[in-house]
Image 1 (cartoon, rainbow, N blue to C red):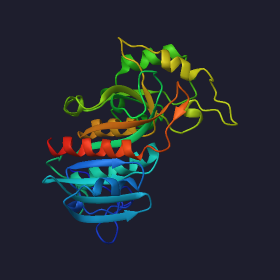
Image 2: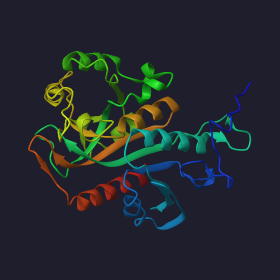
Image 3: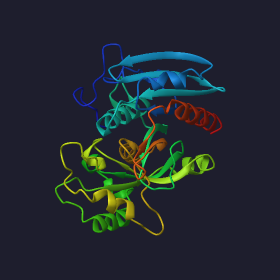
Image 4: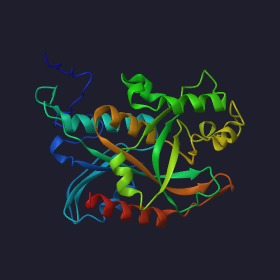
Length: 292
């Protein structure tokens, strides 16, 4: 018997839109660009030939329109893993749940979810201004472990090697390693640098920063930088990619994270005027997605 999803589990607003995103199913394109900064939605949408809808609620700004004839949605998620949990779950519900019956649709729709973000590099050869494709995302957040099937979509051998190499503190969430969609990796690999990216649950101690509160393991970043698994290394930090890749894999969607590098942690350098780099990344990604 088909499960009916209770109103408390899937909240639908009076206007027929989903609770946080305030989108109705017909307003969602099959290809979605995710950005963190609500202001960055306009940077993407200014390239659109026409706009169908422009919806805003809290940090979630959404525009659906067309670029070179391809229908696209751009959505801001705000900062952090928790907002990715909300965004991806609600995007999937918009695509694959019948709001009238509150039941899953018999035929599932596969969304293409591409996050365009900013990031700090932790390897000396990754330069400010590079576009880095997270071929593998490393979750320090623990989110995916709340969902059934976590181990089936993760690289457990890589996880064990990393835990052993770092002497991982057992009271922190266990890291998980999840690959981006392989077809998206192939599609973008001529325009990006390949990387393995940590998604941290915070900006400061979870990324090894020390302002007034000392990180539990002050040498953790050194261990991360020296980690090598069959010639692969960890290249950069950000804050959302692991949840995006993990939830998409569990739900049957295609997902990837591409970040403009705006800080070089090894050189102790950061670029605060990074808007031109981001604009170039957006233009590149739009052209690639239009051709997909």
